[in-house]
Length: 211
Length: 211
DNA sequence: GCTATCGGAAAGGTACACTATCCATATGCG
DNA sequence: CGCATATGGATAGTGTACCTTTCCGATAGC
Image (cartoon, rainbow over all chains, first blue to last red; front, side, top):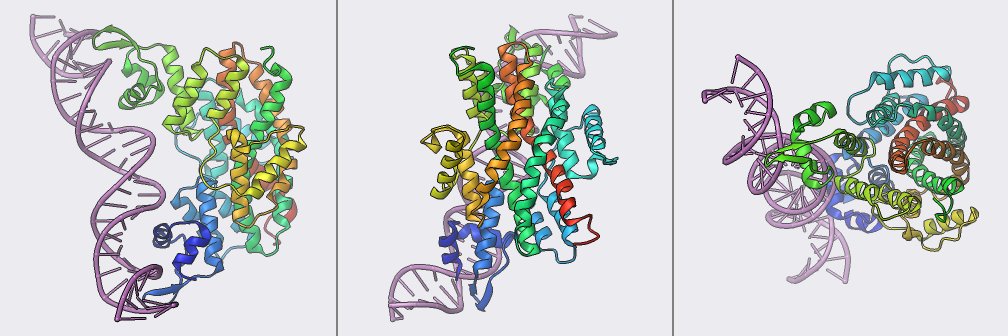
């Protein structure tokens, strides 16, 4: 197929596809003449992945490029790749870290039997420290009390996630499933948590008949 | 205090504070002369809240304005206010909804005993439908299988959230705690889920010694 | 042959979140 | 008092991110 059909089948405008090609988010098509190229289903699949990362995952174009590079890297074991991809899809944001928040993270991580030393070493722990710093900055200096119940609930969720991903066929599908499952899963969790809030708060403050 | 001290105490540059004042994110200070105004701790608190919403919650300036308006609204009961604030902090994003994804949401919601009809009525259900649509668009058409385990884990988490918020004093603190707890909680959950993934996947694929 | 479309490059556009400049006025210190 | 510095308010400008538009000569397909 040519770019017009790729556009029709994906819902992405042609100029945007050209832009993604320029930015290296989409591999070039096979040239059949100096100004005709052919795209296949793999391009369509990749294009839809890019849109999902951008629209649902909220990733920047640069972050998407990093993720795709990690996915496409052929020189790593599955384990290394999963780590690289996880780093790529976990942007910590910017701002100052409260040392007390860093302590909270270290204490939490140690409570689980890990022995990390450098919180800024991984994007994930950095993310957590950033969030706890923000909590402290707005006066919530006991937010870390929630970490243990969060982990308890998330163990159930992560177990389901891993089973979901492990069910996939090839290692490439596992990687891609992890990316999609993590980012779309974040969005799903956000929504379901809000639904759960509504249900849980109903028990406490009632339906509005009495507050 | 005047704007300079507000800036020093919050870490937010003076021009940015002026911008927030212009945009209505921060109430004007009390004028003591035509070009001198006085700000208090409430302004500082509000300013830090704005930064937390923007930096950690990832909210746009317009969304922050909506949230603050919902917080400040004096004409609603606590229950109504919680609902309005929850809508304000739940942006569904844009894109087309897959009818099958809408069905998935309806089935899920009904499974919990609710009887919603219109998925687009609430931002929260719309968010969920958007996420499941995105999953389908990248070929994950059984992502909804995860909804039940997610809810199971999230019940534990939401319970902790509600207890955390209920511990606060005044109704205003409850509202503010819900905003902070929801948005910062989203970020914390994201990070902790990734940590839980690492732990859970270790059991399945090992430490990298064998994959 | 004729119209629509193509690939590729370059310039343009839009939205957002600040940031800089100006100015007349106030503050605060010596 | 004198004078550097800071202030509130208004207007204009900046930088980044993500596309769009416009152009070109070449091809596709009827």
